[in-house]
Amino acid sequence: MTEIALFGAIEIGLVYALVAIGVYLSFRILDFPDLTVDGSFPLGAAVCAVLLIAGVNPWLASLAAALAGAAAGLVTATLNVRFKILHLLASILTMIALFSVNLRVMGRPNVALLMQDTVLTPFYGLGIPDHIVRPLVVGVIVAVVVLLLARFLASEFGLAMRATGVNARMARAQGVDTDAHVYAGIALSNGLTGLAGALFAQTNGFADVTTGIGTIVVGLAAVIVGETVLPARALALALVGCVAGSILYRLAVQLALSADAIGLQASDLNLVTAVLVAVALILPRLKAKASRSAPRSTRAAK
Amino acid sequence: MIVVEDIHVTFGRGTPLEKHALRGVDLTIPEGEFVTVIGSNGAGKSTFLGSLAGDVLAEQGRIAIDGTDVTRWDTPRRAGLVARVFQDPMAGSCAALTIEENMALAAARGRRRGLSLALGSDRRKGFRDRIAALGLGLENRLHDRMGLLSGGQRQAVSLLMATLAGSKILLLDEHTAALDPATADFVLDLTRRIVRDNRLTTLMVTHSMRQALDYGDRTLMLHEGRVVLDVAGEERAGLDVPHLLALFARQRGGAEISDDSLLIG
Image (tube, rainbow over all chains, first blue to last red):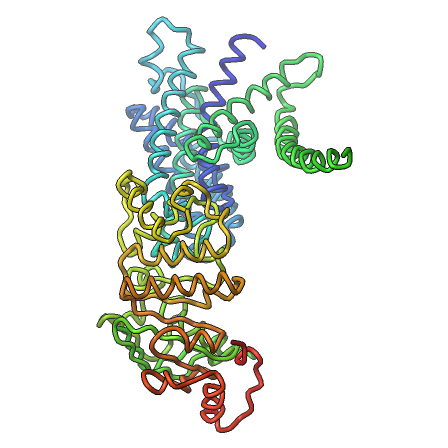
């Protein structure tokens, strides 16, 4: 792996770390399997790209992308909470609808960002190579998000959100408006994904309506890899695990693709992803099986 | 004080499984009274408790708590006035959260939940003192997940959680039914202590006639969605389980008691 490929993998891993954190919020904390991210990621990219071309401040454009993602999440949450559509189906409906919405937002399937200023522009002239500046800036943004989110989840509101996901009946008996917390949590999750889309567009210089495909799998892969390498119970550490998982996942993919001996091409990415996720899901099970059978064999030895 | 006027609840209206669970319950429970509720399976005990807590909305009638009409309020809204402990020890707390996190959740009952830290150091210390008073040694396990506690410990903590927000009404839905007899006695004694110390207005549903007479100041018997027996004071003090059974039979017009569960105790 070349140095540029290494930093490229870290950079894309950090961008998708925000998706991973969003997926952690919906799947793990709220116990709400939400596939909306496949639509809210390209939505964030599209909104950001279109606003940048219109000359809007890059930070404002990124904020708008996050808000657009949050709005998409609210649609899914409304379909589920208000109209009782199964969460998985509700999110698929929103995701499908967003494909059309994204085409409308951009007016065409993809938009290139060539000369536009991005949130990265001010940092390019500081004498650090571009391929290091990008992961640095994205990394700082991710770190800020992790800190804010960890503090949020430790608040009374955040604690109620966690209770909503664990035991909704108990939460309601303790006066928690569980519906409101589902709305807030799914909006937050997709808002983070929209922000990830905006950073993706700015670091890669384009927004494309097809970049959303498989976002949920990548996010879930990062969460699972993170939980495997950093099995933490403390919430802040679990968030760090999402970030680490996302980077490790990208490094693993990069390693698999750049090992000439295996003969993989870039187009094999989805296959590699699926295999990695499957392995990450199977490993803990094998480990548990091994630890279960180990005491039995020592007892047999006595 | 709880005032219940002629409430009716029907499940599955218009279906073959239609069940008229409450058929006009009228009741006034003065502040600080400890009421035990008995009745056979399907008598409407849990539905009655659910209708006070907001899980079940009465389709007819009126419920007022401390002078406020709460008939149309949902569960989270009523939670500021009413605390509950469930039959299933797993249902009343979050197994995946720590003991102190569960306590923080309960302490915010009936309040707006903002962005302030759920577990500041002052609050932690307060929780430690409160849980130490249980005498279970849990004060050193505040960081443990609730799921690691035994059923009895979880019910004890649930009782404590019911007192943290300062609400004055406690609903107990067979909260010792899932426990072994010794643990059940411990939890019942703790219940008596907590109700007395906090001067709570309490409704305790139980399957045991013995418990119904031994605890509290007043006993209600429900049958087919109605209150068929309401005894307190002298009359109740003189009652024993066989008397209660006979009274019950008379109320039902001499009908045989067929449900074994009524005889337990």
